[in-house]
Image 1 (cartoon, rainbow, N blue to C red):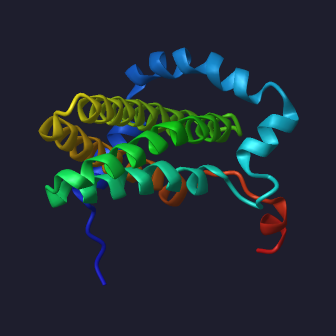
Image 2: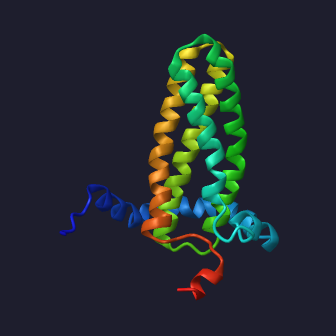
Image 3: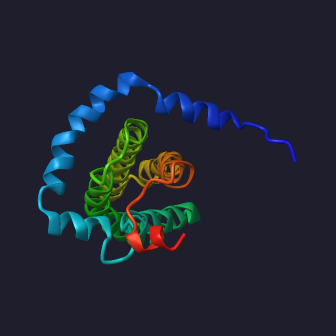
Amino acid sequence: MTHTESPLSRWMLKLENARPLDAAVGMVQPAIKAVASNSTVRAALQGRWLGHAAHPVVVMAPIGLWTSAAVLHSTGMPEAQRPAQLLTGMGIMGALPATLTGLAEVAAGADEKVKRVAVVHATLNTLALGLEVGSWLSGKAGNRAMSKFDSFAALTVTMVSGYLGGHMSIARKYGTRDEAFDAAQ
């Protein structure tokens, strides 16, 4: 079987080596240090109690809630707006734990390449959150079309961000885990 390099792999390598992102990484460092300053809090947010990173588990809530809201939006039924609003709002609330676990994960000793990808991942997640807030506000104002548009735009951004998260954990094998797994190899 021949190896064919994906165009996305070339793009990811460029992203990992994009030194201009180091300024943005530096701007996030105070937030990372704030989350990681207490060892008990850091261990909880990193998922030490779970045996591996908590972040992939925690992000399931907002992503699932927002996906469900988008499904309701796609029906076009007026009666779907209220439950879509509820799901969107719950997802917005779930973004804080997702953010905190993500910051704690980077605090575990990410190298510069992973930090560059992480800062783009976080930026995209912030954009997606802003779009979901926009969807919620539009829905509250009765603008179903804009609420639906923002919801689907947010999910698109979230998918790109998820690709970056997968890259860090799978391609770069970055993530906190119980040391028992290291010894068991």
